[in-house]
Amino acid sequence: MTTNAARVLAHPSREEIRVEGVLHALSDPIRLRIVRQLAGATDEQACSRFDLPVSKSTTTHHFRVLRENGVIAQFYRGTAKLSCVRTEDLDALFPGLLDSVLAGVDLQAERLGRADASAPAAAGPA
Amino acid sequence: MTTNAARVLAHPSREEIRVEGVLHALSDPIRLRIVRQLAGATDEQACSRFDLPVSKSTTTHHFRVLRENGVIAQFYRGTAKLSCVRTEDLDALFPGLLDSVLAGVDLQAERLGRADASAPAAAGPA
DNA sequence: ATAAAACTACGACGGCTCTCGTACAATGGA
DNA sequence: TCCATTGTACGAGAGCCGTCGTAGTTTTAT
View 1: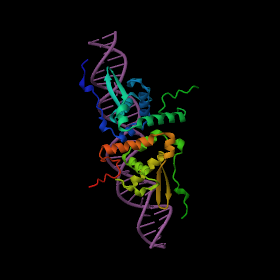
View 2: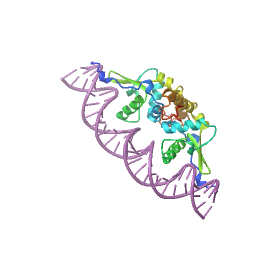
View 3: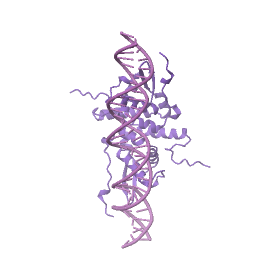
View 4: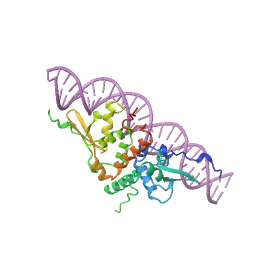
């Protein structure tokens, strides 16, 4: 290893996070799906653990949008890049926002019979 | 008057409203400002009562985005077009979402000393 | 050293968004 | 009838967005 300092990712500070930016980051079905999976996990998750219907470069793009708008934090570990939701910062800045968005996504998925793009599996029984 | 039937505006039904669409509609500072003013009023407001830093056609555009994504309802009365937030529908579909977004906008405006684009007046006392 | 795994950078493409100005339509009052 | 008020439709331009493929970098394992 060389402990490459260049492999540190830029994040907005808590004060720099804007509600418009957060809403924009969350207004895409694929990003909503990512955040949903991250919020449901107990610890950080590697990008590769997401089964998304887009190419790898597009996946990178979506993770970057989420990070640059302050929704998630990311860091490298080995060849993997781990991500987690910035729950503390978001709750401090916009109390209840993230929770109500995620709850809304769940309700919508239920309502639409999980045919929605932000649904995780859509693997219907038969 | 002729009670022109063509002057009826199309709105998505409650079931058609999508959380991604709502978030997208709310991810613009000008639209956030509109919704904020509408939510703060006790009754419907005419488009002309909004003092926005964009042209009239752009204002029309933003109101349409809000309406087409189910955030507001609009109807004509005379030469005026009145708008109001679809509070009931939104609360039923995504409980707490609208409230936390508006609260977040308020907190952000306070935090930024009302220098924010989603601030209503910015008219300091002086 | 070589190879595999994980992710990025870059350039490109089509499409959508925000913005505007100008011209037009509907309503209500003089 | 004529006109002022209010908002729309349309076309245009600049820019951003989501998507991709290809080539490259960093790390780990053999």
